[in-house]
Image (cartoon, rainbow, N blue to C red):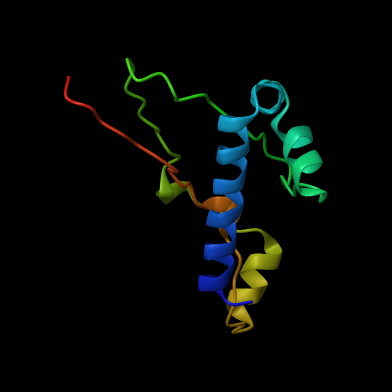
Length: 110
């Protein structure tokens, strides 16, 4: 699977989680309390957090504006495996764990 296919698949998976949270209050509550467990139950697959915490924030309150402050890309550190992949000339390098994705940002007139 190439990068573009992985990206589309990830977007589809995130949309599935969002749709389920909107439709099922119990799932949404579990997702907010224990996102890894909730997503694993939904997907039937383990969530590879690679030692990082998965944070889910309910941004559905239309009276609030949410701003995501991502990590500084200048502080990006690749693992030994990722560095070897680059040095070895591999075509596909998965640095998805180092990329912050803002799923939605809706700004309504203040």
